[in-house]
Length: 473
Image (tube, rainbow, N blue to C red; front, side, top):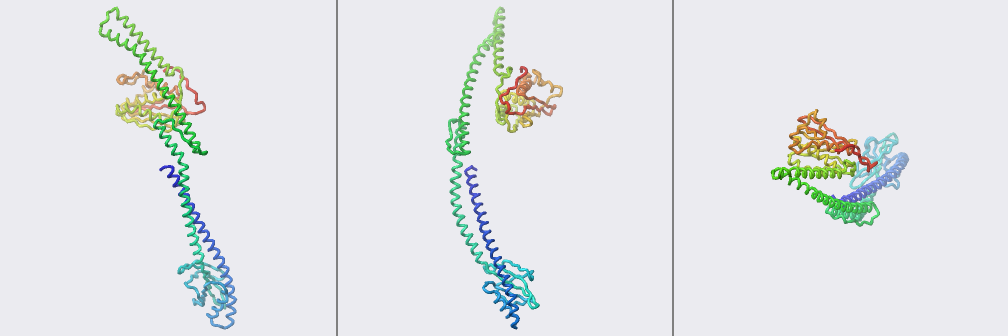
């Protein structure tokens, strides 16, 4: 779901919810206040009616009129200008007076306590008050019903008015949400388009954003990032050109001595040289071989390992894992071995090519172990730990202590067949040491081998510090 859609839906959800909730509470509170006012007003009127009824009942009783007529006179006199509908019931259940249009409920009626409830009858709403009083030795239940239907009518009118206001505000809010969502997401759309262009190789694209807010800061940061990337790409292109020039020069330097070595060696092998010239040919071969040896030492110096002049850089462990996976995929398929990778996010300060070589050498050894699968993981444990695990033939305990020695081979015939010289683990161990870490191994025969590269925790206190190797590889 796009950010525009999320933002629009979010604004509309908040708007609709706030209007509904506010309308609900406004209408409800207004209705409750109106009903409460009617209850209080009706309670006052009912108490006045009871007091007047008691007085008028005594007066009417002295006139000697029959019971029902006496009660009717007392009720009419007590009501005065009130619009109550009244019902008076004697304790024996006889109705002495009744102007109600419905049957009232008088449960728990008692003298001195006025109770009330709401009664809905024939589209009308009443508040019914009732209590008891004793006159001339008999108990009467007095019921009064106050019609509050107009309160319901006004509340319904308020609801209709609020619904119209709600529709107007909803229409206005919809337009505002569309405008606001577009305004907010427009810079993000430009940023997305520029990012897509960068992914396709156009590093010159920039974002125009005049907003003085977080999106403006983000756009400015993107422009700075794009400028930096463009500079880095130019530097990389220059570096690639320099490497290509170096390879071309290296190939040229290799061609002459190799031509001489192969040519004179072939002549000696075929026996076409006189005995007096064999020694001269051998000397030429030796001299050209020494020239190649000198060239090899120069290449080692270029690696800067012996001098400790390593250029450390901060790398993303997940990106390194992807790079290694791509590189090792062909060999894994050739060996028909499945390699699984699981690297936790993290950053390492290493000389990338050397460190990658160390990890790849460990994976290469695992592929040669006779396993059917290899697990390569990276975890954060007081630093960063890279683990390579195979399920192959394993290493005997007495040989496990020596496998990191230079030129030591557990299975010499297998190593020669694989073009090995016993330098792999020794080289890996030295590279890890150069990076301030250590190499640990666990193995069991016919179970498999686990190798861990344990690096110290990366901190930024001194990012330029470079480890100093103590000895040659």
